[in-house]
Length: 263
Image (cartoon, rainbow, N blue to C red; front, side):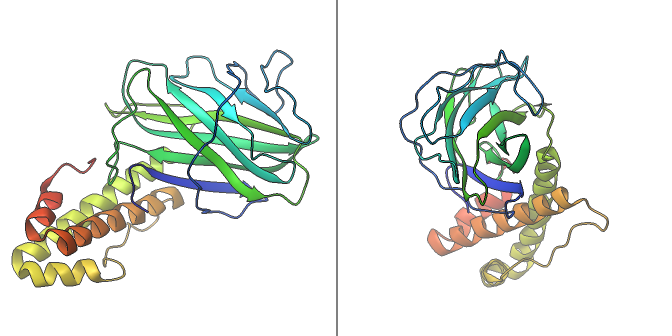
């Protein structure tokens, strides 16, 4: 899905992968800033005020993290339905093009679910601006039903990419690899469609972009994250050019094929 910002959610553990994320976050409350690490929160961690029937929410803001989780919204969070809103703030000096927030759900000492939500802003296909210094963004984690009662949820920033191409974070979900594959797929798609347009004209370009997928494959032995990104990148370019052709025509399509990829 191409929108103001590109978002994806991957859940692991007891959750199915590739779930769509629901947008929209309600009123945000208590400010949370904690510095800690590990599966079990330390006694000094700052936690959300306990609410009857709701899991405890623990925010883990690592030392030196340029993106802080500043508040949470647990209005729709319950023991069996994981749906948590968070607000993140760019606490650094550089614009952010991509961010990923990870979460873990626990029942007692047992982990019953985990995953992340990733948001691409100034990355291929996104028309929303980068997250500048001091700016905030709203994210929604989860949207899933749990078979076991959730007693505690931990959330943390997993990965940040800056506009200058540098990155921060443990990147447990390998979003850096996904982004690399995404850009490679977009480059391949752009080169392929430019050739189609140059030698076959409008009709050939419309036919190519109207196909289910472009006939482009990632290199053999690509890792799963890179391969998934490759598919996202080529599909994004194909979709944008198709929409341009169906909308304002060849000039708009040509502009997309000649503009910088991260646009």
